[in-house]
Length: 132
Image (tube, rainbow, N blue to C red):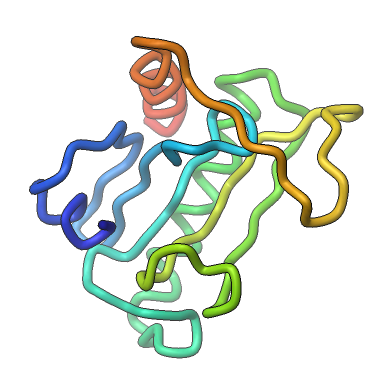
C-alpha cells in the first residue's frame, strides 16, 4: 500500500512529499490528524532502513509532529514505529498521532475512529499547510 501511495498509484491524503519521504493521513486514525510518515523507497522495517534514509524520515516525522500541534491545536503527539509485530503493512512507517491531555489514549490499546465525508482532505490540508 505505501509503495503504491509513494508511486502515485493509490490515492491518499498526502501532507508532505519529498524525494525520499511521503507522509499521509492514516485512513483508520487513532485520532483525526494521525499521519503515517514513510520512506518512498521500499523499506520493510526500522532494522532494514539504510542510514541515508534515517535523517530524511525522522526529519519529516519531526516536521509532522510540529505541524499537528500547530494545525490541530494538539498539546503534543505520540510518535511510534511498529517493527514486524503490530506492523499492519510491510513497509516502514512512523505514526504521528496528535495528543491532548485527557484524550483517552491509554497504553497501546488504541481505539480507532473514522473521518466523515470530505473531512480527511481538510485535515490533510491543515497539516500540509503547517509543514510549509
